[in-house]
Image 1 (cartoon, one colour):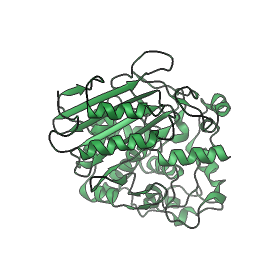
Image 2: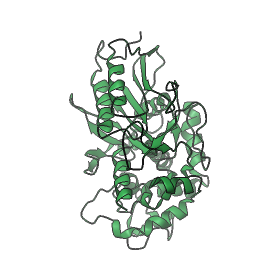
Image 3: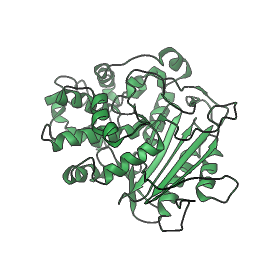
Amino acid sequence: MQVLRTRRRRLLVLTALLFAASGGPTAVADPHHADPLQRRVDAVHDTGVVGVSAEVTSPGTRAVARAGVAERGTRRPMPPGGRFRIGSATKTFTATVVLQLVGEGRMSLEDTVERWLPGVVGGGGPGGSSVTVRQLLQHTSGIPEVLPEIAALGSADGYRAERFRTYTPEELAGLAMRRSQDVPTEAAWSYSNTNYILAAMIIREVTGRSWDREVEDRIIRPLGLRGTSTPGTSPFIPGPHARAYTAFGTGTGTGAGIDVTALNASMAVGSGAVISTTHDLSRFYTALLGGRLLEPAELDEMTATVPAPEMGVRYGLGLGEIPLPCGGSYFGHPGELLGYRTWAGITRDGSRTAVVYATSDGGPDTQQAMRTLVEQELCGAAPGKGPAKGR
């Protein structure tokens, strides 16, 4: 159980931020040159991950850097435009769909869970009649976390036994309700993937169509996100991708862990199931902050934040607000799902983005190195600073 609790903490702190695209020239950084982005990517790789890839954009420019390999024990480089499981950056997609439905007058943020999912939330935790949609998206519902109940995420043996298992959202909600004794009573904010599983269920009830279909039709297709998909019950990552590895908390470093690339991510519907690329995440977050996906009122709701002590940031509706070392803040959502971890960000005005993803657990400094890369790149927003100039 301690391993599961440790795992949940890592899944909490890691979750994907964001990225933005522009149609300017692409510069793939040469590791032999003194390129700031390449140096920062190399620094992430030096913490013990198998592979790492990053992209930075600003108006008219785009820079990319990679380090490590796509598959342990080979010399295959990290693939350009590689696809990966974005983990909790999925939550921004889900929150966007919910807020679109709010803007269309089909539901309200003040609707209770009980209105749309009668009898689903209960047990020893908060009842569905006392939890609103806003509280789900904001992680202030008090609903318990389901992930410790998922064997495939907890150990190598559990992964081998259940990596192809399909979960229904109803089953996941039931598993979460069994954990009502774990609900914190002293804090108003508590991260729980169950919140977004329930949000996906509400999307289905409001629209009569699955969460996957709504994300595809409302976000992926309109924005032309060709490398983005909602895999449903398929355990495979389509297109070019690097392998993923994890040691399930039993070791760190490049040599630690087993290959966990194949995974039926149905346990993460609404909360962590999306597959994407750095370029697509860039386009998504740029469109979102630029007002292409939400009307001003709904975007204001999404970016209105409350303290999130567990993550050390502020949190809105499917978006984190993180302070920048050079002053101000940026928006995004970190993410991790079995051997794929990402950290990315977009400036408040949407003019500059940075995202980095890595494969494998890495070491104790990996997360900080990823965050440092993003924040230094976002702080280098003035012309001539950083690697975002097309070369």
